[in-house]
Image (cartoon, rainbow, N blue to C red; front, side, top):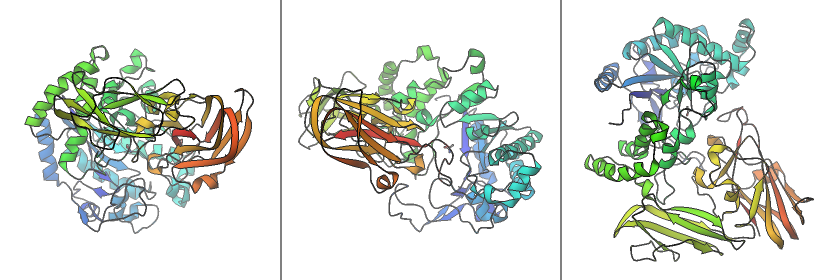
Length: 580
Ligand code: ACM
């Protein structure tokens, strides 16, 4: 219906091996089952696990059924066999394929694991035998070999790997990964298959005729297209359907992030940075649904619908003919059909949204809206759930003291969309002028610098909406209180979520000025002091008077070894600066 013509099937990972391979029966008898699973969200302390023996796999007969089913619908399946990382289930079955001897078990939690395939002849023989069976099963041209998030710790420690690096004249472990992927690519050519991999496979030099799946943003895809390699554009910020699509209360648990429908619709797989010639290398796009937090089919439907329909319009229509309000209007009718078909779609597109603005140095004002002009919005401040009889929203609401605002949209008397609930704090900085020395990343900068003084404290699990994300750079803000004010402390709200590559700052410095030019240092927090903090970090400064306050929040800059995304830029996420 949506003209999705390719199904990317992620068949192996740390937590389970899901495809029968005749030559290696332990891949499924051992690798397809784990002894328990993390309960709740990654990062929750204390970590808790259930004790359910969980698993399963597709037999080759079942795979053939799926391939045939897809084929009658003109859908090509791209199977993915992960290497060299995300291989813990495989090496649990065959520990001799790792650099250390194990024992390993299929992972019970999420993230990235240090034990990966070792690039020995034995490993290549194994992978070639696996890929030979996979090539037989899937008639499509492409085989995805993963390549993402492979920690190099074990390769660094391995005498064998270090010898191999010397012998092959490689610079380092990153080039060793290219060597690895190149060898696999040459093998796939003998099977008349083409290699597809996540954008990390660019890092040690782009292998052979590889096609790149760009997920860590546009950059990998742009670099590949400029080198005349085919690209599938699927950056997390627009294409990861495991992210939250709503900030309404009661949204089911998701991995994090924030990808509302409008953002999917705004996506353009052909990056502006590409010339018309380079743009020819963009094959298309895909939506990704990783299922760490998805335990049943109804939730699969909920996370993909209707975002999949927006991605379909992005993929199949010229940019000039895309019109979000027309699309939303059509969705209203489309939802009736989904309802008739019994599909569990999200109606988050009809949620109430807020837009917060400065209110002439007297706190903030909040405008409420929905995607449909014909609905009415009702709201409360007294903690009760709004009904069609609650006060009707007509114009911006002025806020100069802390409040909790609840709102909902009604189509006549019928509620439509989810419950909007948000607390606004008001302090000396709220709604005041603010400027930044370094800009946040384009994908996490929705409200601009004002986000840091908009009175909104970002919710957990975090979604992108209320945060500024700095990729490898610091957050340096100057707040103009408009006149001399007296205050005792500055507080900074930051995120700590290493699974999403987001880290606490390594220092915070506060200085003040009367004229906005000459700043006097007041107080600093060290890495050690910050490490003891939870989210809201307070910097006590004693009683001070000033008009301008400069807050430097120093990014960790690089993700440490062994952590998910090691070696990449660390993210710094800031959602609010308070002056009290
Ligand atoms: C990925 O999300 N690790 C490709």
